Image 1 (tube, one colour):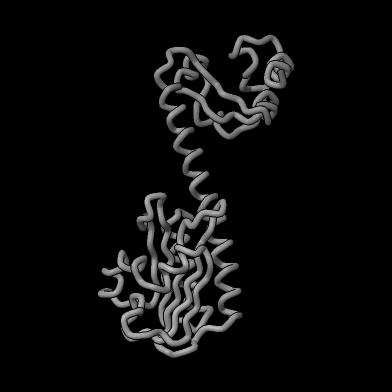
Image 2: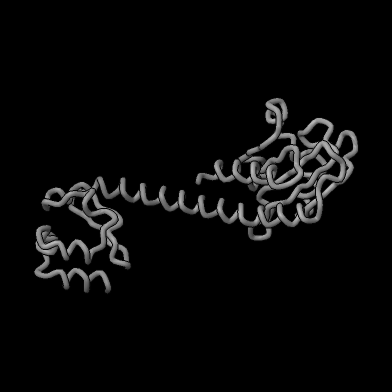
Length: 219
């Protein structure tokens, strides 16, 4: 999933699994601004005001103190995005001891949230940030790989990048000069390719035997 999709799933799950009338999940950048947002149960008008959520007392207190804030009887003026909200629960999302987001639940019923809800949302926040960081890492690795591929594509010589695990990870189009197909190599294992006698990979790469290539990779 992309980060946006994860946020949407978390907001929907938080609303459906608790007594919340509406729920929102937001991610905060280092400058304290909302960089990603998703919600469930809110009207279009409320959604259009999502940037004000960080200024609301319950959410702002949770983000500032790095601790969950649960209010059973919301006072007029302290509502989040839900008009006439009576109960609120905001759980800060932490990563490396820093607040990187929050999950906010709102209900039109007073005292709607329990300690069980508080515990549930805490676990949800922990799992959400792990999934988000994994998604970001995957995207970062993918972008780095694409940049390397662009560089390889400009090289005049045929190049094949093999991981320490023996997997072909990157190949430039110049391998066609060796009678090889780029798409047939990427993602394959070196052992598997060398075992395909009709391919003749070792000879095409200038080696006498496949063992010579495998020794080179291990070194």
